Image 1 (spheres, rainbow, N blue to C red):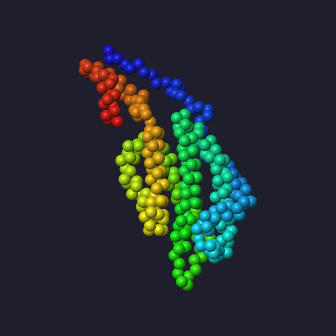
Image 2: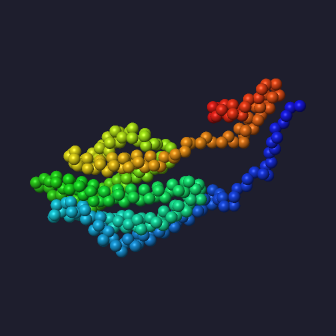
Image 3: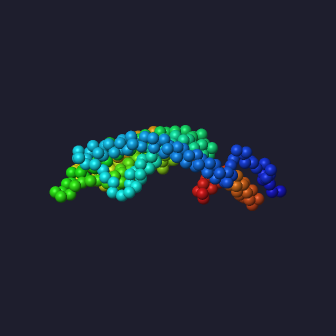
Length: 299
């Protein structure tokens, strides 16, 4: 008499979804509510920034004006240019003021779906992202953009007066600020990829030559001066960030080897059915370890 597997499927024993689990529409509703809160916080931050907009404008333009010749001033060439400049400043300052509220809302939305280990990774990522943002903004504000404006102001002609436009100058300043903030997020990205086992410190160390080359190419594109020393000054932070990222990748690398996913119930049933079939045919049943190795090879 052939043996039958001692397994009974009972649909009533299936684990029911927990009461705290949300559906798709509920997730959309929660996302809508949190976006509304973020927009309200941003609007409140912009309103608060309007009371200090002149001080903010002086702070933003001070390094640029100090790098220009003494008698050089920024000019406005179209109606509404000054208002657009003030609105852009208020938006940037309002986002900074509302950043804690926005960060809290994002965390409250994604935290329920994270495991305990994933939650412990969020804090280092947020700290590194904030430090990178501040460092990139300070480097652009105090070093990169004033040096570029000083280089442009040295190009003079006999009958041509250099009068930079407020709108174009601030647009260039804003784009360079966002670009350098993105560059200074390299350690944050490396930390995230290292925790996912996508990159290692050894891999980054082996590619250091390419990293130095890319840093100097980026410095040549960002700096208008052809002076190699000037380009080296701008490439040095990028190379330094890469070296710091190697250390971060070494520290953040998981020490435990990646574990294989356990075989699910369906694969266990396949193993049991194979053993029973071979037993009914009079063959020696294969061991479970042999079946597991075969299944892993098939997968």
